[in-house]
Length: 66
Image (cartoon, rainbow, N blue to C red; front, side, top):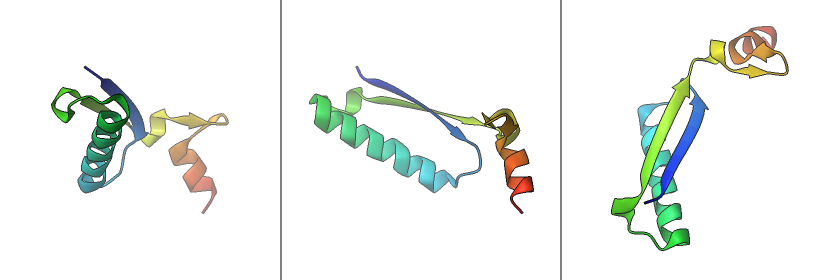
């Protein structure tokens, strides 16, 4: 049973998250010849204040780029 875990920064529309789940499920099902019913996807959304890039949170980087 394939299990896919994805971590993304929060803030995407629920429809986009649904598209991601669907797309990952389809791709893994096709590549691994696994029934879609056996594919599991877990999306974890992290607050932008808790995700760091190059020593700064995403929220801080966005503030400074304005």
